[in-house]
Structure formats: C-alpha cells, structure tokens
Image 1: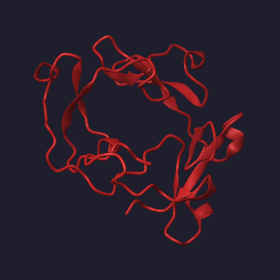
Image 2: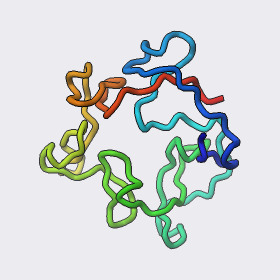
Image 3: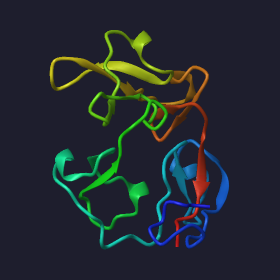
Length: 162
C-alpha cells in the first residue's frame, strides 16, 4: 500500500500487479503498463498545496530543497523541502553528496558503477553512472532489459492508479 500519498496511509488504492514484463506489449491490451523495478506507480490523487522553496537556505535544519518526484504526489513540478539524503536513500546509480542531495555517482570506469549502470561523460567534463541501454536481456548480464534499460529484474504489468 502506498504510504506516500499526501492525505495519509491507507487513502490510496494499491496498484494491481498482473504479471512480469520487459516491454509494454507483454502487458496485453487491458490498459496495463510495464513499470520498471523500483519505479513509482503514482498516487492517483495529488497534493495541490505543497510548501515550496527555491534554495536550501529556505528549508529548516536537516532539510534540503529538491525538485519534486512522482512519489511526492505533488500536482505541479516544483521544489519542496525534504530530508537530507543518506547512502541508503539515494536511488541506484546515485550517491549522497556532502550537501545532502542525491546525484549520479561520479565514476572513472564502469567498475565504479553498480551493476546495470555504465560510466558515461557528464556535462561538466566528469563522468557519471547512468543506467545501461539494451535491446534484450543479453545486454544485461544477470538482469533484465525493461523498456530499453537494464534492471536487476523484470518489470511488473500494473493497472494505472485510480
């Protein structure tokens, strides 16, 4: 059950999982879609009154100003104050920076990245870990090619959140 909804735990209908997938066509024609592992399905209802910010100094101690993500259940794309990151709170391929924000892991070679990620040039002349692109499972040793990217497991066919 999604406890991320702004109006409290138990107020959202949990998604219906209908099977494993690697591409949208694996889910049939019933309105299901292929959700990659670890991706957020959404809230169904969003929060129209978030407390917004434009920089970290506007947030209380222990919070940083970050761009909203789907899991924040905010209707508008904006910035909000959220807790500083920890090594465990960042997504795969990201690291917690000293400023409390998650960012792609900086790398020199692919060995610096977690499985299913590769070291690619970044805009600031450094390199960062990005999810590998693939055409099928053979491009993802030990994993699955889901919607053209490598993941640890196959995705899940799910109905949209009401």
